[in-house]
Length: 350
Image 1 (tube, rainbow, N blue to C red):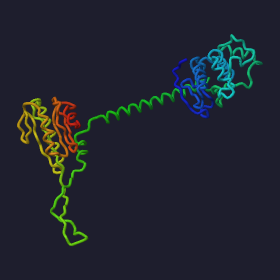
Image 2 (image 1 turned 90 degrees about the horizontal axis):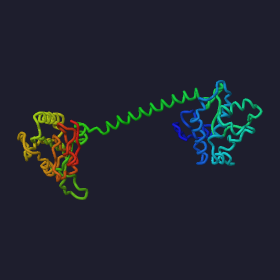
Image 3 (image 1 turned 90 degrees about the vertical axis):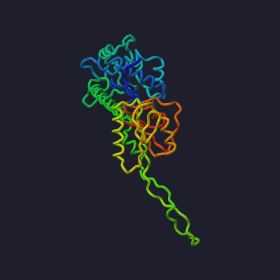
Image 4 (image 1 turned 60 degrees about the horizontal axis):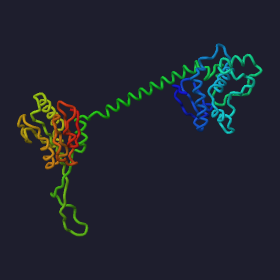
């Protein structure tokens, strides 16, 4: 038997019984074993499937209608295994309604409405102390029932379910927004700042001796450190694939980099195109000699290499770049570059 009501596991002390339903969710005690869980689940699903909250006759007595619903489930849903689970001496369901729990009730009286009418017609046969041990049929102080009555409980439960769904949708939206931010390529400024977090490096010098040795009067040769701004090399694409608009964009990014960092870095600007790499702008044209960049970096070993280029094809056999050099590619006229992947670098948003 399948229902659309989701199943919630909670301690029996919280639920008040092995199981109950508000016709929106099904609550089952977390302490139940496998057999008890089977019967309780079938029992609560039967309440939902049979619509016991909607079928209650007008002005019907709550206690009597609850018995009628229980007997309908016992006579139409329970199989031999369910009956064994309820009759087991140590079962948490022991004492629950069974098909023959009400003495004298004809076997052909099976529907809740018919059972309720039969109980009205035979008040002497109404059970006095018998109660359902499978699910909760408690009544509120004002006499309204829960969960079988259901009108108020269903409304409140539906509101809670809607609130839960809205909270879940908000969480999904927040996670999606965070994923977009997390997967968004870093900006050029942030990437450069991260790579140049330490902008003052120190180098060794032998201009000053160390302190005198504690054992004698000999002055030992020593060393001092002095500030040395990190080296940043900027490579600007001048190949034939660069249109005048791309060239203008590249020059604009170059000016922004040089103006932003000024004297806090040592910067060299290189231009590549037409099979050459030069510190003089040779103009546009020719192929894109990407392989010249890692060969050059192997000699100079800068702290950071910034390549302003587009998405030209890259040779399959590119020289490797030393791990001490961070490579950033600024895509011009595209969103990613194949060069960044080839040099184990990073594409950054201009």
